[in-house]
Length: 381
Ligand SMILES: *Cc1c(COP(=O)(O)O)cnc(C)c1O
Image 1 (spheres, rainbow, N blue to C red):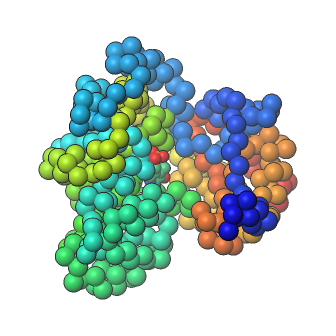
Image 2: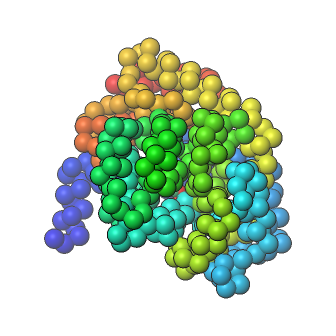
């Protein structure tokens, strides 16, 4: 089918996506099409992307190292900024060593494809992030998917895959569309029992959950059970990139095998410099994540009181179930008229009939903005 027809087909189903040109943004507002909106769609959960201290560090990084890394980390692009950031990340995650990738997506591709291959089994939650699904497919391993958080089904999958030489279980720690947590303790007990390895993606939880902001594993007190984990610098840290933290030999192995690490230019050094500062702020300013989680609780409570279904969300990511595609888009459009941007989420990102508004909160949103959002959603359905 010619591309034009394929695009028409998407359009007729209400699935055609267009890029919005954002003229500018702050931690809670975006400006586009000549208008300002309160932004409830950003993963910049702690407002760090525009924090003056982090911007200053990024500029300092450019002064010291230039703009681009210049080559692959394995050739001559492994700058001091990368190594310092990796030491900071290892300390933050309390692991032996860390490795930085130019994107969280690439960290998942590299990690999964290095650890699993043809003849191996990858077991995963149905709601895992697209980057994990792509990574599993690319790895060539046989993929086993269990229904969301269904521990009985997971145990069955572990039994069923007993004959595979290597099994890797992968789960988001905080699910990106439902805002709920994986039962990591149960999962780690099961993987230990059946001798599978466990990989946890803490993209949305890094900087937000746990006493020190290390993620859901810290929050649940099970960090010691995880040999390694993956996180991003692109969400609460307000920067860019992804990382893996774990044992020294894992990191050495990734350096030698992860193609999304080897065959790409190293992350921009200014970003590394800025990310070090972001971690310092996360460690030293717990009030940011505490405030964010309090505001999230307030919003969920108010939405529920008003009869909205927020699924199992227990975080700063709050879905409001709206049903079909048309209704969801109409509500989102009405909110925009009121100066509020909440994106409509539709298939293929979520299953048919599970369309939703996906609210993501920032510690920088005010209670006034949140209450304005609740009132506006009520008026728009
Ligand atoms: C966003 C996200 C990623 C990808 O991270 P980027 O740095 O944006 O490439 C990976 N996993 C999960 C669960 C995510 O939400």
